[in-house]
Length: 436
Ligand SMILES: [Mn+2]
Image 1 (tube, helix red, strand yellow):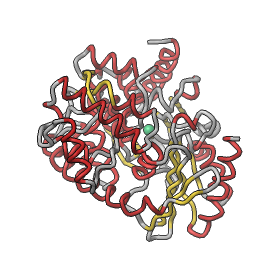
Image 2 (cartoon, protein in one colour; image 1 turned 45 degrees about the vertical axis):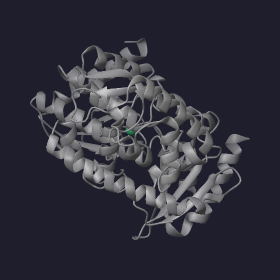
Image 3 (cartoon, helix red, strand yellow; image 1 turned 135 degrees about the horizontal axis):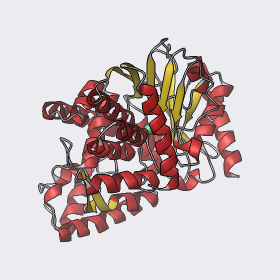
């Protein structure tokens, strides 16, 4: 472990000390892949330590009513809600990697484990599940949970540098994960994988002829399983995918993520890491968090259900994208899209910002039936060198009486229906100012 890793380990140790004063913990975590992975790591390590707990998945902390007494553990959330955390009349452990929006002044004991507090980049170098894993390792012999932490990091589109690299190394050397040369593609039949993949998005959905000629040129059989492609076939496919990505105008940073290696999670029910991320994310978005959790705890039956959920969800997203991509509007420094009660906005925002329109930040507004408005904003790492979307979302939401935050490349907000126009104007203004 590096020195920064050591310091964060000290914080994890303190969290374990605080836990030792309790027999029961209330655990709150986020409903995306990283949050669910963090929840699974915490749940398993608490079980092994003989602690009782109650685990709840939340979309966010906006309407959160804190309980009093006992111990409350927040994972993948909390750091961006320092004021709320300060109001909780209980012992609190925060295991998060979102940028803190201030200081927490706790009513009782608090351990705040967050890489940003130690000058470590929480956007790329460690996710909440990575932090949960460091905590689990201090709690007991939990090295086998490293593969779940890797899953969370991939879910948050992180890099395997810094603490993430250390976790991957640890996981590989203990046989829980394996890094192999290859391609970042979901498992299954080749033609289906190319057509249905959301990450990488290759724009073959409803473009059967293009897909056919793509495969024909390569001399590859679309019915062949991705996992059974030999070295030469993989190589050829990788080259063709890079050309395809160039053709659709994808952000160059995705190439290195897609081509070169694949990660297998050897001790989880589905070994292909990106297929598993898709399944876990889809379950979360479909409100089936307990299925997702069961999968990460090793349940093969739950995996079957999860795969079905994931396939249905993927089709919905691809359909939605096909319908709305012509409706993307131009601002000065952003693009935006306004959707009416869409199934999910973040995969749409991700695909637009990384694959189809990477030269400007994209803001996807989802006006829900209940009148609430959910905003997903995405951009590339390249643009995020100058621009911090978390700050843009926070300030713009604040201006219209909403709440926003997140990461430099991926952020979000909740605002009121009548404020969409004013909000977008402010987002555009702030982006122009940061990019100037
Ligand atoms: Mn996260």
